[in-house]
Image (cartoon, rainbow, N blue to C red; front, side, top):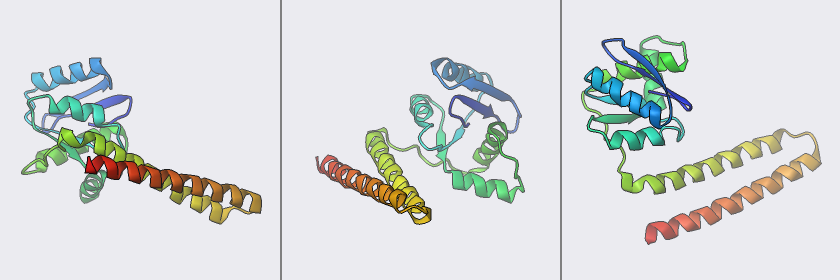
Length: 172
C-alpha cells in the first residue's frame, strides 16, 4: 500500500487490486476489501509520515501488518529487475515482498508515536540545514550567501531548542 491522497492496494498471489481515497471512507473500503479477500498479512511502505493514519488504523485491526522501509523495497525491486515506478506498480511490488517475508517486522509501539514524530521533525530541520548550506555554497551573490547563512543560523537555533525539548520529554 502506498499513497498520500489515495491508497493503491494489491494482493498476492490473487492479483486483486483496489484504489481508495486516503480518508475514513477509504479505510472502511480497505477493511471490506481485506475481509472479502481473506487477507492474512499486510505490508505498506513508510512514506515520510504519510503512512501514520494507515499505521494507526492497522494497529487497531486484527491482521498482522508491517511498515516496510523504502530501501528494502528498492532493493527488492532491483532484484526483480523492476524499474517502472508508480503507486499501482509499487503496490504490486509491496504485496509480493510482503508475501516473501517469513516473518513480518513488528509495527512500532504506539507509545512512541509522539517521540517518533518529534524525531522526524528534527530530521526535517537537519535536512533543511543541509539544503540551505548547499544553496549558500553555490550562490554567486555575497548578499544571497549572507541570507543563506542567516537562515542556517536560524535553523540551527531551532534545532538546538528542539533538542532541548526532546531531552526534557525523554527525561520526564
